[in-house]
Length: 609
Image (tube, rainbow, N blue to C red; front, side, top):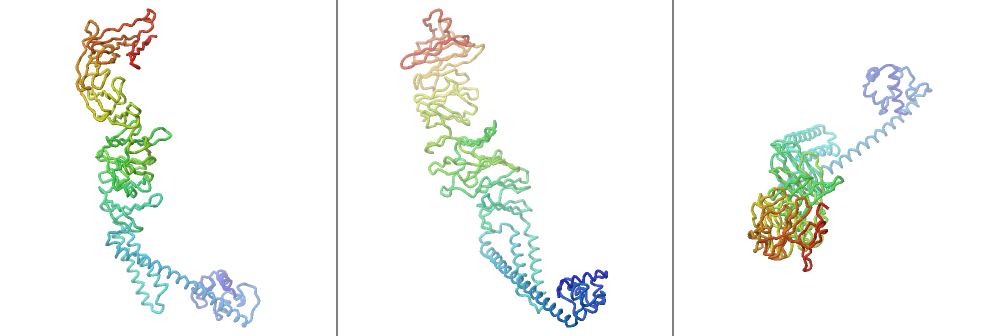
């Protein structure tokens, strides 16, 4: 006899009579639960009920047993046989279901026992070993979550593996005990577990874990330096209370910048660092960055910065901003934050490819850094590389590359080189200076000098020992046209005091002490003692006595040449033998140059040819 078929047949007959399970149960003197079990095939009607069912549904008993209409009548012996088969089938099915339930309970109990053991060990290790050493859970909620897992698994173990089957009161007592424990734990969790909010993040390669806790009442933000799976230690309370959201930005796998707003609305930055060369100990990040760093994009030059004796200067397009030593705050040995007026502006971090040279504490060639602006919005991470020349020994590393007997101005600092390799810094502030006019500088082993304009005055900066020492002379309110030295001590200077309509009024001065003092030696030009020059005039001396002076016209059509034979006191016009035809063509005299012991004079046609 098919129990399911029988159950479906009883259900269909009941519905034909428009009867509910309760109606049918009432007619045959049973409960509606018994009817439900029949219809689901979980049990079958007792033999004494079959006649009553047949009468209620107006069918034959044999039709009920076969589960369909129109079947042949069967004898009472066959009925008993079918019932015995059905009983055996239901019994087997019940036993199989009970075995499955028992197996499920056993597996659930074993799994719960394992989980219970693991979490009871975790909690005991925390309470008796880690907490006394200053460790905390990465989230305050975890303590109570672990407790709740222990309580729940304990309840599952009891009802699956123990369970006082014949002692209802003991079961009730244990159940109440577990429920009370759970309620107490949840109450403590609600009261204490939500006092702080945890921020937990991992680096891109999961090598480092960031854990922050923010006190929801006070706004105090705490950073934990050491993490051990679920536990943290060595906390550091960050400056200022948080008022608003917290932004984290991983510059690389070892550096994470934490940006937040404090209660007065200003931005604050803290940098969590995990890397660094432990063998080097502590070093200053701004020092290892010495040089020029830049990043480039398809749209042209991007952000760049330079680190020199003045500090760290960030350049973005036409804008630049200098950060001096007091504007730089270091985190660990891999990151710095740049401040202006106590407001954080940029975060810089050394990338994993940075290798610090043991001798010089400089980043070796190939190392890169990451720079980002400080903002609560999503900011671009700029990867920069050193664009200064780092070939060769870093002990001779220069921030800029300068040619032989040449100079270069970078970030307001003047650099010179005598051999194209070693670079020397000239003392002074050269901010705003881009270059020097011819005649206002000289770089040679015998004499090096520069003429610089400073707050309305001219300064003469010079060295007689290849940049080992420098001296500065104030020239006063004047305009130096050009300076020429015949040796390290003796030199001549053409200065203009006033200029008008292409005419310049001034003097020629001489120094015998290398430029420390200057005295007027000029009486005038020709027999008129005229001290009037042209705005394009220049001087050049061959020795202490013989010198030359050019007097070009304003438009550059022609230029006269004058000579002195008494050290610049008197000048007379230099007349050269030329044909009348040559005089009409070549009338622009340049200063003569000495080459291989001979004076070479170049005469041109001027701008009117």
